[in-house]
Length: 431
Image 1 (cartoon, helix red, strand yellow):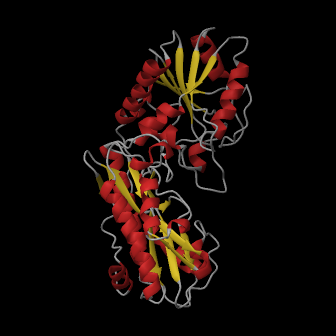
Image 2 (cartoon, helix red, strand yellow; image 1 turned 180 degrees about the vertical axis):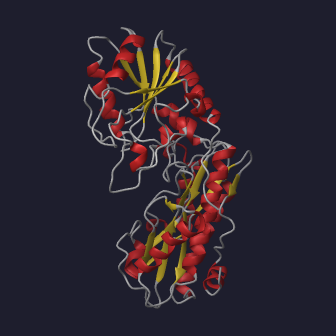
Image 3 (cartoon, one colour; image 1 turned 90 degrees about the horizontal axis):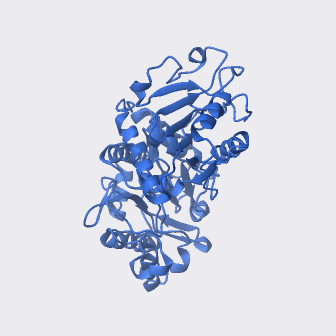
């Protein structure tokens, strides 16, 4: 199994049309408006991964590109003007000679003047974007609006914000308004269609395979990094996948550190080891956590705490449905996080539960979406209760991936066992 890119770009064109419809209905209908979205930039220390919202709206994996959807006009992709044959150095998806219609576009244009080399770093000069600026000036006039992603609450749109800020200056003295549409795009990305659910399900299958592979080699004397290496190798071996995030293998005292990436500890008899991993398949993430006894068998104390964590997850799964909230402190009686805390309070373990009950998942492992909005059919999210008792070097987390249905929720990772006895049996099996 490996990912074959989607060549049906009508899906992405439809998403752009939905975004523009929502902009017009929620933000007014300007005489001249343009939806402007920027792709990510290459960093030669890492494999390039496209910016998630750009990919969601285009399906294009080419770096340093800019999409402009002119309202009641063409969809234009602006690409860098390289002075070297880029395709000789790296695999490239799209060229100035490419057919725009093949990618669901109307035009492909250069951004501006020729640049040195075969890659485009995030250095923003007016010359590099001269053709884009000229087109925007011509179309927008003095009363136009640029609708773009300007949410400054995280790192999602850092380079985009830099470029749009520069564009705003280059367009002077024209009075162009800049409007943030990150909430609109977030809401579109939140609810997954059937093609997205299929990719997430495949990512889940790869992650289940890697969990099985890891479970079979856990034993005293192994080091965390050796388990981590096997997991990342399993992703590649099974489906040519990369991790959706750095694989977490945390044993003993490290199991009480939520995102422990030290990975140098030796697994010891009597330890628990938390394995929190997720493969990325076709740009879509998975995120599954299991906790294993290094000896192959839980102690009575470990099993006691393990079963409380598992019961918490099963309880939250049983009540998750449309209209509930993932985490809403104003409506705690229908907030999955707060109900999980109350459940743990009954067992006097709530003080050891120090993170949220889950997060949305999709193109990003911690995907966009407001936790304080009601859950909707098509929402994909995790349920991941955990108990971390530092004084006992005892950390347990159980995490699965779910999708909200019309009446409840479905576990996408249900094929991976999680009852304590089944965990022990899996550790002695061969996958």
